[in-house]
Image 1 (cartoon, rainbow, N blue to C red):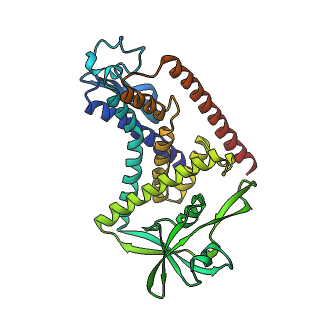
Image 2: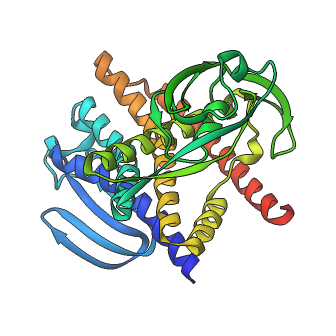
Length: 357
């Protein structure tokens, strides 16, 4: 029961907050809003304030916002709103801002959750990695690292997650990684270039995996939390999550990561349920990460997603003319086909994972 409630609150809350971004930006820009709903499906309660109907609906998995004249088909039908309040009759840059506000709110929510967790704990946990062994002829040895070194930073940033070192190396894409190291109480900087080795990944496929050639431990380091540190730590964690998600998408596109690892709503629900049993902090950490993933997913330049609309409106803002209707329709067809294929893949992976893992 607790897991079910957690799934509803996390998924519903994240989607609703995304829609809230669209709603608030539309109101700030003076656009007409016909309805704004918490939840989907049958309406349980509604109240009209001004020209906007606020609804509480039966299915609590998200929400939606309906703007006046939000499509070419409805722009001439919403006569209850003056022309200057209809979405499609507003300048392209304003429409772009309304669409962009949804993903931005997901990033802001991720940052806010991280910040709240850091403040509530009164301290922030940083991580350091004591180097136990440096392998012969490895990138780490060639850079000058030695056993006993303690890695305390990556690319000039403190380390907020025990997985940050591995993921940074994994996503290095053959670029040098700058490691901050303490040796005998003295700080050093080493520029290490990971090399690719073939090994089986968790999906039983042979993929090139970059390594620096060390074995290390992981040690938490508690630091008292001031206001500035909490804000900076949350921002750093948010940026790290954005980079990790974006690089994961890129690795899948490049064929450097398996499609078997792609999951959908079932996998997300399982993850939320598992974290719910571990405690509130785990649920909130996962919610922040999913919110950031949702923001990035919606920014992909695929028609029917926010990113596709941003691409079209951006083109119109720069050129002064809208995208050709035939091009728009074709792109929408391709984008919808891609999304349906992606949904089929995620459901297949989720079901396969349940049956055979």
